[in-house]
Length: 253
Image 1 (cartoon, rainbow, N blue to C red):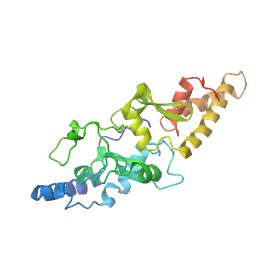
Image 2 (tube, one colour; image 1 turned 90 degrees about the horizontal axis):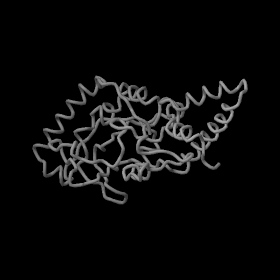
Image 3 (cartoon, helix red, strand yellow; image 1 turned 180 degrees about the vertical axis):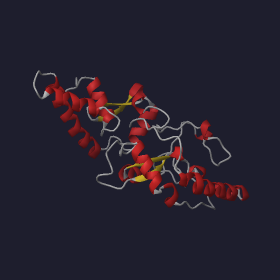
């Protein structure tokens, strides 16, 4: 994960259609809050609004075409999804828990709550999970303040994930034994074997180029340029590359 810097201005469809739909849901909730809190009533959401092409394109640009969770380049092999950081329809605190309703319906069309994500991270791992450090602080409706929550998932639009998660070779780990980093890695599948395998290929390439860059050869300059580019935000797995280069590859092969 790397920091995500979105444009300050939300896409027009969210400001127009999104806000109107949010107001309608808030009005409906106010008429029968008990029914919504008990899960007897629910909301419907328009993916054509929060997942509108203008929203998706803006997120893809802001995230350099990468999944905001695993940092894989997405657009050359898949469509990708527009995902909600705080789940819109319902949430789960932990694995095996029944879906709790309502979700964060008032944030369904909120620009700050949307990210571009690969389908695997979204549909197999994140799904409706949104664990908190203290469940008593969970916002259950638009009348509650999400600012009082203590999410365990790292929000890359609000903080630098690289201060909490680093890498030993291709394997992510929690810096300073951070609970939030551990939960983020585990529940979001950031250390899944298939992802580690692809990152390992990248790591081995970077290590070979690092060793080449130290030699006084014609190819050394090109190797150094590749390493410089590998740690930039638009590079695939740049957080891993940054950790490896910072450690100067002083890890047993």
